[in-house]
Length: 251
Image 1 (tube, rainbow, N blue to C red):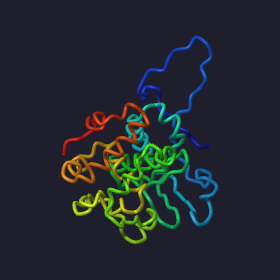
Image 2 (cartoon, rainbow, N blue to C red; image 1 turned 180 degrees about the vertical axis):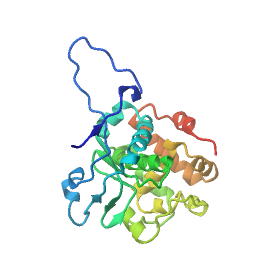
Image 3 (cartoon, rainbow, N blue to C red; image 1 turned 60 degrees about the vertical axis):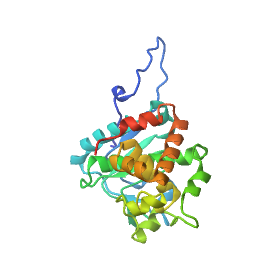
Image 4 (cartoon, rainbow, N blue to C red; image 1 turned 120 degrees about the horizontal axis):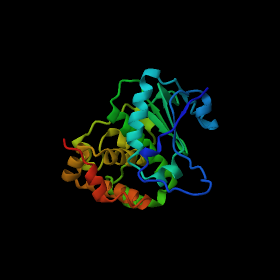
């Protein structure tokens, strides 16, 4: 039987009110650690060209996965999670279109692969990147897309998708100072505007010192990061520039 693990109310960023009468149950993001069958994917993903597939998460990695996701989810206001994220599936191996991946997302679900080789920080970063895709898809009006594209070099075109970047061996997520000059954190950020947005959103939410260093040195990175922070500020008033700055970790 599938086991659905829910985060305790103590993880919520505020205290729920006490009601004298019946309380309408609220939906929390459901974290599922022991399922990998076709049923976890949207129907359209179960056949070509997506052909999504996964393996079950190793039981020895489940407690660790639950803990790191608790930390990741705690960064978001409850209202944001309730509206935009219904499920998080953690699996062992994940692939679509014949290409292995560390994570992906559907309309209200994030899929995360944990083979045991990546650090907690890497896995949490992938979660934030995938959730940022859901938010961007749901709220495109929150991002000044025209200004974003103007920051890119004249004539620049994204590759089209993360799959294309992987197939063309241009999927490095290593910070690259040469690419910073053009407004990209790394090669994979050039896959699509969504991946470009993901790359900054994830590192901002993680307080990545490498990002903050790049923001201080490269005006185009600074401007794109400001657009991302503005996007999140429109999502919820918690996400002020000061809030993001307070997340910054020391190098």
